[in-house]
Length: 129
Image (cartoon, rainbow, N blue to C red; front, side, top):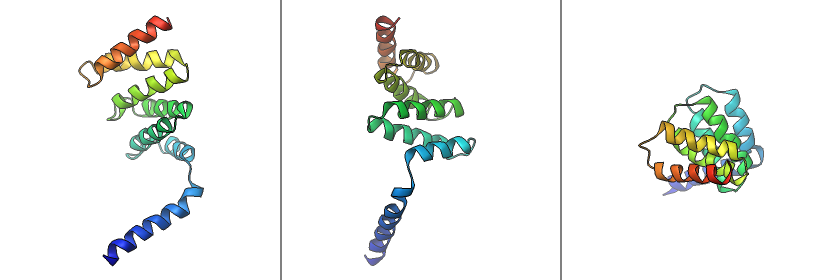
């Protein structure tokens, strides 16, 4: 029991110390400087997801765009395209939203969210030709 308490205490102390010194934007800059490392795509993806959940859509869009540029065929590409399309839609960047939706439909015709992305692409083309 004491062992687990010490582990939790160490994690809490580490988070308390690092929190003021680390920002997501610095993490995104770090991933840009270390492109090619195996840990970069997941970090870019999760930074984008956190920005998306915080409703900071311009930064989420930047993170997902950076991920797709650095790792165009990676594991996180399908979900990143969905998030990118939605974040760009919310920032009224219609061209990026359409391009992300079209890329998902083209590259992942059997994807889990294909119907959602087809409908989003139709809607974007209809409202913003």
